Image (cartoon, rainbow, N blue to C red; front, side, top):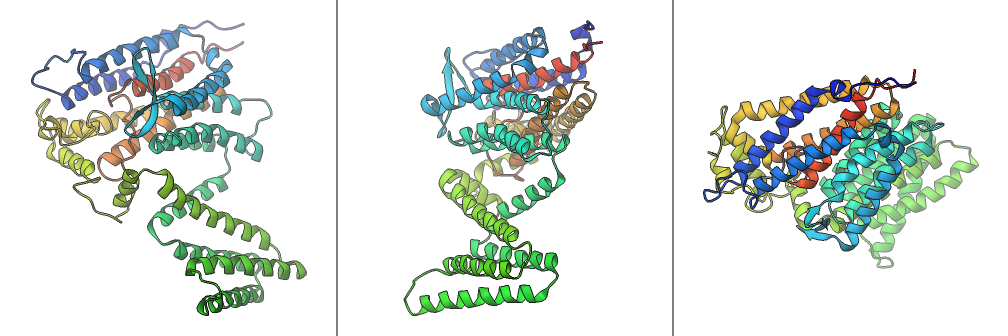
Length: 474
């Protein structure tokens, strides 16, 4: 039989209290960021801070609603909820409302909602549901592909809006997969791809491709331990390159150096494969396949950067990487944000006394850059306290996840941790100039109904699952 438990008594009130502190302190800072001498009433519904109060009350009602529903609902209907949010993401691409160049919003009953914010908790649910299905093992390639499909589907649909910043957050779920036993080799591969990604943005493609060819040759040598095999590979490559070079020199084939290198690699690889088959040389096909996949990745990064990212997003990335300097243009937001935070000193200028805030020097200060309002008006101690509380919440979430008796609850709990962790790190990182400005909110602080409702659902579903952990079959 099922053990009956008092859900409210078993709820983790420490996490709930931290949530309430964040929401109410965030509301105060939204008021400060939008403060107007003509509209001093924080309850004025015609101002952003008044609207945020409505969203806060709605999130409280939603939290209660989450607690009323049986905890088994979230596991049983995980696939359905995920499917509904995917349909909404498709719908918003077709007929959504465009804001700041992205078709990310849909109007429902006079309110604008952003489906990508709600797809986060449903993605967490469907991952937990799949991983707790019988016969699913994360060590199997099929399971890995299905899980990455669950993550990539909403991410790709959000990129098509286009909203690359929100899409990037979905990769936070990879942390969940590692907790559940994803092979360490995948982590090593992910690190290598991350390095290659950054290198592609910073250095010429020809330099990176030549580096990859050299690394492939070194790996080939260590796997086969025979210098003569490597020697013949180098000779074949050089002969092919000299041939294309002479054709170009005498105008039989006009090409750039990059094109000649790529053609040389293709021709010399084909010749060497025949050479390797005849002499039973091992690992050749695997190394060449991996090399060409990485080269394809380089060109895909280049395509995404120049064709998918908006010009202002390209500029922000280049500024962060030190390739451009634009303190009065796209670098203006970050510079003003750092000035605001630095001007707060240790104790801050006081509530409603921030000059950078009051005179609107920082664009989007109540949304993406809400943290600079905290830094200016509450100073180092206020900003530090927010960071410590966030850190405490994240540690608490790990503790709660590890104490679950249900694998579904544990996996979903790590999903909640991962999403909040990425939002926290990226938002504050971009506010202080350590990360590019990609336009994502600070959880529970930034202005916006979709953001607050989405994070509330994400967190309180886990609190509900945790409160129900003792309701198990005897």
